[in-house]
Image (cartoon, rainbow over the protein chains, first blue to last red):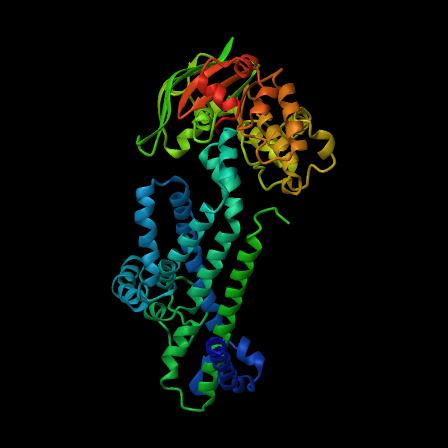
Length: 288
Length: 256
């Protein structure tokens, strides 16, 4: 009898977590839907976001979001993947034991603190070094790359180390150098894990709010940037900045909810891709 | 004529805290099969791996002298890459790369093929792959399936593929680390038959925990116990008239 009660309690808890997620999603959809009554074409592909003129074209915001996210990812990959290779295959144990936890600690870094650093150090540096506003795409890339880096390094390193030792030994015993072994045997085998770390990093970068908000400039009228030194507006920063003055029940508020739906969808798709990549990679490279 | 001459070889693991081999001296004959037997943890695999410096990978410390064709491979500024090309290895678990049969065999020649022209490389690889697979007695089974993943094949076939892969870089010595322990009896018999053929061209050192196997395939047998080489000699003599009591006890199954 007692067991039945516990089972029920667990069942209700499990159900409630699902229920909460669905409730929020339903709410988002309900609130965002009216924005589409202006016409989905105007909403998704409209070039002008100008709430006081009732213009709600999100295209520049979406493009900016991807420009910032992808750039940050490229940066994080360029630093993170070689770092992961070094840590997994070349570094002495003491160095790995020092570096890996430090990098993983970056995950828990409060993003507002990172934003503070971005605003006072990075933005000033960019302004002095390259001119322009300082608050710009480039600053966003760097700050997001710093936030994405730990995921990329940590997951990539894990997947490189998960490559069966037998493959490595076989390659070395044939007289391959360590670098040849990494390139021809280890990386192809760790490919799916590395890819997953990148997609996951991308999801984080797109959804990240505070640090980005503090360094990308957020011009009043969003546009598609033509250079890395221009300020931009991304999905998250637009919602945060405007929700406080959007009139309750106005089209503006609905449009912001619709932005939220878009953001949710993008992140959900990226997470699903991550899961799929990891699952497919489980069997290993070249396996059926 | 001895191909490998080992004098006073000691190997330490774990920053010198664990001694896995104690002053082993042995002469391994060219174009013969030498079997290393002994209970688990006796140092036979460590000894085997010191012959192509695979122990370096786990940070082992080595003392003493290992001469391969008269060249000291630990102290003589030996190029490890060239050494491993000369001294091939086949492992306990069949470990083909998750690539096609062809790519598995071509792997070694490719990593050593510096400066071959592209057209020439392809033709040479085709020839090396076929020849190596033939020598490993695998060609008839795989000749129409060279593009298929090596992982689709049986354990015994995979192990013979690993042998072909080792042969493809044209070694002089091949080390086998319990090559049959993961195989069924039929596959084991095929690998043993292969060993007897290969010794015409190669010097073979094989670690085995199977004494019947040592008796069947080897010309010489070395018995290890607790890191020491207890007895070494012709296989028939070791199995019929061991001079050390511990050897006799081990081969008659009194311990192990």
